[in-house]
Length: 227
Image (cartoon, rainbow, N blue to C red; front, side, top):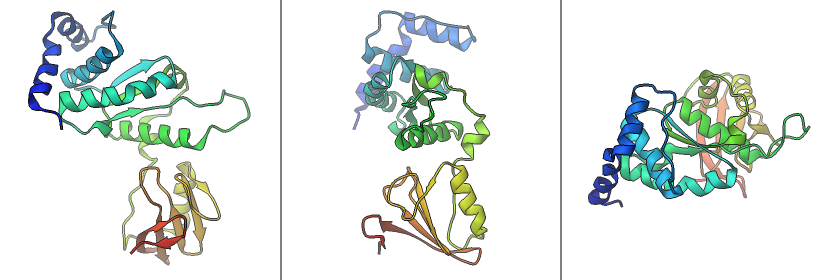
């Protein structure tokens, strides 16, 4: 819990002349505004303050994945203190661990984290992104593509069996014999198991024809549905 007094004190940072001048320049769409001599903690606070004052999606560019990871929790804490919003609205887009044309696929977890962060930002569910330079240099797709990486399904909904499988494959899920890890799915007749990176457990979707009959979480180690 962050005390109101703490939030009030941190909010005064925006009224410091150097900070106010920089934010005012950005409000007027100046190409740049400079603040120098900041420690990492001060940078984390300024990023959160910039979003709170400007109300625009904010990106913090850093020099490496390690730096991004070390700044993630400080930025989240200051963001929550300054805005009062949930800290998970601050996301980190990790850089790939392979080079273009290297002939290797990036680690699955990295691809999942990137997809989730970009989906949240494009869907308006993230306000601040922490991005290493290596990640920012990669060409990105349009916003609509990242919005389409997620789909909500519910019981009694009608959806063609092949359409659901096609969506999962198109969104980057890997088809496996059994679904045990985030980012995987498995198909057995009218049963489709899916492990979303956003969920603590995979779910089992049972279709009767093209109608979703049930959606239940299950234990990936035993493959048994939870009661």
